[in-house]
Length: 385
Image 1 (spheres, rainbow, N blue to C red):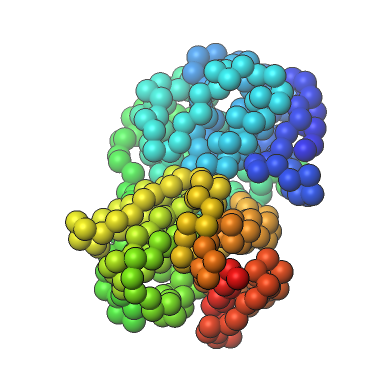
Image 2 (cartoon, rainbow, N blue to C red; image 1 turned 135 degrees about the horizontal axis):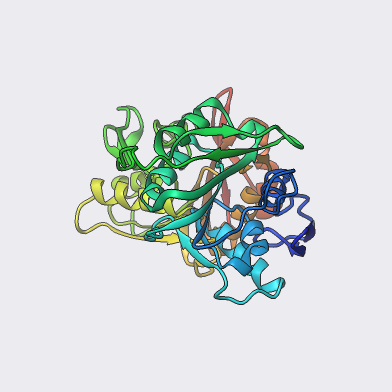
């Protein structure tokens, strides 16, 4: 946990799940820059948050916690971000109903008077968010975006310009930048182009030639990523009533492949992204018959999967948390998988060679074998003894 000091007060903040050894903070210079601008500390008039305040993409609840007195609406795609927001509000004494937290699958507000946008890593996610929030924006809405310099590109500004209105940027401060956008009510309010669907190649096992659905913001939403493509060629060949988990499911192609190859299996798709789980649900139902069984879970890895209830876990773990490179997410996934697996159950993982997942798996499971590999990727198997 760390303390954020602002003109509005001091706030103890942490990511979720909270880990005292985690060196990453729950905010960065982009959040600080935005908060200073709202208070007029950057040599400009303060922004009075009158009316409905909407915060889109607040990563760990720092903005929501500082602005809780203004009763903002927070819109997030991240289950972990949602849990962090609620935990940070509680630890700083904010009333539980002071902030309305919505997932991206909920209905957006009908009117927004102050719109604050934390620029996401994914340009597609930003596009979808702006399209969905645009109908709530009016000529008097104050729109401010924030992000680190490496997150804000010409394409970022063009999206604001095309969907909301004329856009300019601030000077960079501590490698952070602000985006100021003036709403243009005359712009056409077109629907979001997402979700996007594409056909899989013909050399990826049971899902060859199938169509997958991808909501904005999921990893490699416009094409099959090369790691998953390699994994699909080396999935285990199993029969019988397996209980399978597609952990960090993305568009659900791994779990769908497992069921197509073994119709007696049931699969649980798990991801911390609401859009990812929606993608997996669409991919599964579009490619399986009425008898196929699956469940879809937005959550913190395997935390909500009963212990010793699973036969097989398939995973292509992320190694980024927003812009930060970290193995913490994969490590938590591996521990959760071991707890959920029955004796003899298997975890199959694909990862870049340089990530060294085999070392972690041997430490957690006591064993790990390389099933397949090429110069870039390895498929690993660990068995719960």
